[in-house]
Amino acid sequence: MRINEQIKVPEIRLIGADGQQVGVMPVREALAMAAEANLDLVEVAPQANPPVCRIMDYGKYKYQQSKKQQEARRRQTTIQVKEIKVRPKIEEHDMAFKMRNARRFLTEGDKVKISVIFRGREIAHTDRGFRILAQISEALGDIATVEQHPKLEGRNLSMIVTPK
Image (cartoon, rainbow, N blue to C red; front, top):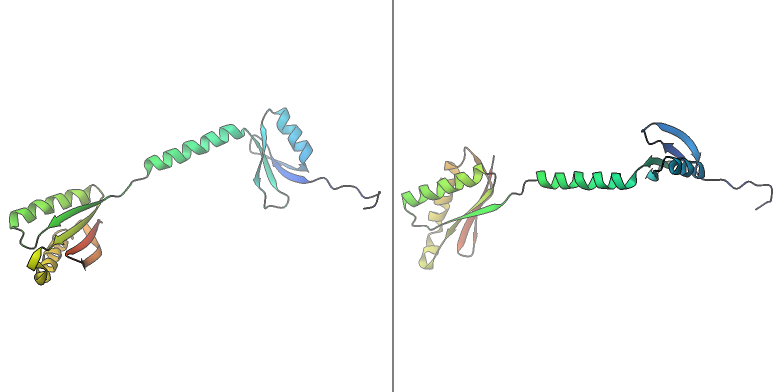
């Protein structure tokens, strides 16, 4: 390096505390302006050329960000999967009772998993289980859609419906 060459001072684009663009200036001047305003100098866009910095109260900014995240988490709805278990030899009244519960779960915004459980020799009549699930999906068709079609897993035949 020659003695005549000047050392290049890094420059940044500065945005003031009021949100107005101040302009391109050396980092030292920007730090002095931030200290004068009793605020912090925060780099907001390091990939820009020159990098963009802002004069702000960083503690207040972090607090506001955490409050926004907390509010977003509070507004977020969690969808639960409720399960209704039936048998292949279910009576009409019992089926109506289970359907009322399924309808209530769906109107509350939850998914419903409907399982037909086979015991002993009932597994030989899986067609009965498929008919029951088809009947349920038809009855709930006005408020629900079938997410997972009937699927036989071991001795259980299950289907998942979600609210429309």
